[in-house]
Image (cartoon, rainbow, N blue to C red; front, side, top):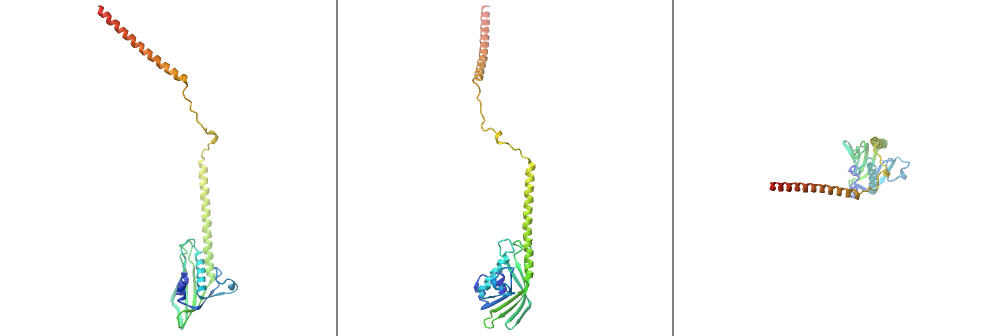
Length: 239
């Protein structure tokens, strides 16, 4: 239960207090690949000791923050502890077990791989309350640091590759635009105003006179035809 609470970074102090004695201590290796609760005290030490629910929860928060840094998304990355019952030993109030811990959600958040580690736990229980008095965790921090470096370098490579691809795309776009050779029109060659010139009075008068002359000619022709017809009628009557 202790490993489950630590793996999911349990935020409820009551759950921790339900399984831990008041003076509970957690001993684990110095984890300089992430932030620690007691930074100055573990500078030249090979292990760190945390006491009480408050420090245990603080260390759990720091561990969770470290895990979130492995990915690029906003979903939570947790640590899942698997324990084989065949490797579990109990002697009175002391228990020994081996565990395999693997991150869950790191790949979904953009990491190239999940973080995995193996370790051992030695726990002591209170015979009166059956709560944990102390836990000693041992694991290889060098293996963790090696995996973290690999994940971080892969992430940097992805960023560089994306930047290079963007640069290539921009260059290709510039080349396409240059090949189009669009004509360039100078602003000075475009007139600001267009003047509309009305027809001249002379052309209007000439046109009207021409129409009038044509009308008069038509009228004269009609009159002469009418007179000719009248003369023919008179001559017929005389005959």
